[in-house]
Length: 266
Image (cartoon, rainbow, N blue to C red; front, side, top):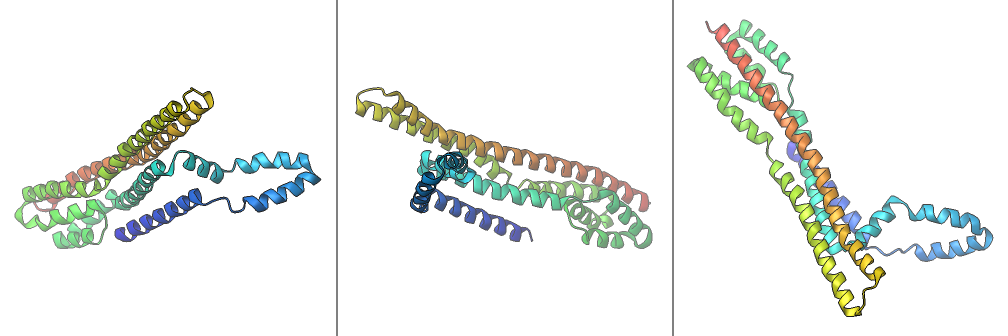
C-alpha cells in the first residue's frame, strides 16, 4: 500500500512537471486570434478593452510562465525538479507517518484483556492484527515472553530502534533538496550576473535598463530556489515533529507493556 502511494505521488508529480514545462516552452498560439479580436473590440469599445487587458495579463499561470522563461529554463528546471521530487517524498512521508499513528491506550487495554483471558499468545494475536510501529514492537516483545521480562524489555528496545529508522527513511532526501534548491538558484544567479556583465562589456557602456534587466533575470533563480526550500522545510519540520511524537508514544507504550508483563507473569 505504501509503495502504491509512493508510485502514485511520483507519477502525478512527473505529469505536473511535464505540463508546467510544456506551458513554459509553448508559444502563445492563441495570441494572434486574441490580437485580432482585441483590435475589433478596441474599435467598438476602447475603454472596456483597456480595463479588461490588465486583468488578463495578471493571471497566475501567465505570470508563472513568464517568470519561468525569464529565469532561464536551463536553471529553473533543476529547481523545479527539486520541488517535485521533494514534494513527492514529503507527501509520501506525511501519509506514511499519519498511518503509523496508533491509539496506544486502546491497544494496551486490549492487550491487558487478552493477557487476562488467554495469556501471552492471545495478546500476541491482538498486536499482530494491529497496524503501526507500536504494535510491531509489542509483537516482537511478546515473542520473547517465554524468556523472561528482561528479554522482553531488551527486545522492545532493540526493535524500537529498527522502527525509528524506518520512520526516518526518506528525510535525508528531503533535507538534500532543501539545501540543493537554493544552491542551484544561487548558481543560476551567478551565471546570470556574469552574462549581464558580459553584455555590458560588449555594449561598451553601462545602460541602466541593460543592468537592471540582467540582474532581475539572474535573481529569479534565487527566488525560485528559496521558495522551494521554504516549502520543503515546512514539510520536513512537520515530518520530524510527527516522528518525535510517534517515538515518544512508542517509549511510553513500551514501558506500559513491560509493566503488564511483570503484573501478569507473577
